Length: 514
Image 1 (tube, rainbow, N blue to C red):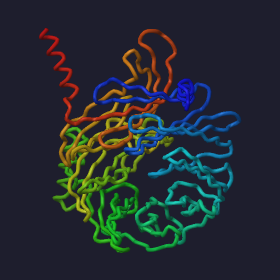
Image 2 (cartoon, rainbow, N blue to C red; image 1 turned 135 degrees about the horizontal axis):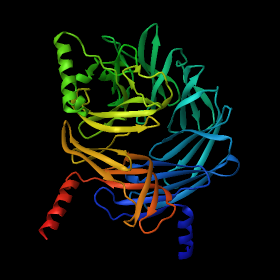
Image 3 (cartoon, rainbow, N blue to C red; image 1 turned 180 degrees about the horizontal axis):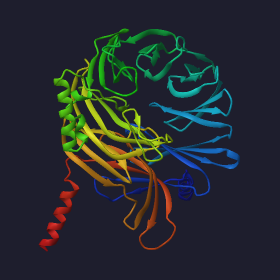
């Protein structure tokens, strides 16, 4: 048995400490890690649904080596275990992936074909590494793990390649029938029930574009090839595959007019065996709430222009960039979330509809305008749609900003901005609770947040979100250098609670009555 002194010492060495935040409905629990002021340090948060979360702390040490610390917490942010791994200077993290049981990191040696897969057991913190050699040098952009095989996708001499790396015998082989010109890997989708994977390919040849799905067995054998139709000059851009039964799946995504990456709308289709059924094309003008992010007068002008084009027999043209999320499965339907964004450049000019209004093309990040939320059934029929405006949200990386949790048939939408969380509650195509703004607070009222950096939001489980990022926190009582922390807040949303404005009005009424 450990003594009380030993237990306290273990908690101190573990690094983080937990704080119970006595605040309103927007924040309940808080976790803090002290940020090093003398070395480079990075934190990654992996939500694990009701099982809690994992925090990965990567800290630079002597001669370029790194110490990686893993902290596992339960749903109440109580620490379950911690583990460490020393990363030598020649290894660099490329991609990460997790499933229900493990966290994986793909590591690669500098200027080498040698790779290492680091596997962390989420149950007990045991760490294993698997070393191998790539068949050829490749620019890696995809990394997923099915069973005891890692599938690594990328490009060699601008041609796509997907390699299967076995943890058992450390062998690596390339999946067949992928290495072709003018082709990019749109995505790699795993089907854990069938023990298969699908590689989604986008190809442009002689001015025509083709979207193809190649499905492989766990052993890497090609099982079937599905070629999606190119109809009425509509070309598929992306796809998410949802298995329905042994023989059929549902595919959803966005499409373009012609062979571009600018979205015209959404599509839905069932695939039986390797044959797609008739695709349902839903251009953005067919979505009831797509333009709700605009101010009323601007929205009216846009809708009137589209109506006039249709009266003249012309199809409206749209050129939006769309970031499509993973599909959410509910009891009776599927929910698709996608965000509209455009690149921003360092001189402040933006990218509109394929025209850059600046001669300076130095890239600086992305700006998001709004998100669309759609419900559809197993037959691929659109049931409803909604919209959530993002007000001047920017990010250096193209990441999903909108996060969604569910409660009693309601969807709670949220996104972070400037140390605050903006929320809206919808019930299918209706907004049942307008936008609210919640401040991410420090541990107690005697402290003030001086600065917020790189705040992110993640949907967790039930009605909970995880808000996390970097903060500088000072004291209200004395002047001194603020402390810098990496924080994680458990953010609970109750759609039935009174609005904040209503609470403030009630307080004012009581004060004036006294």
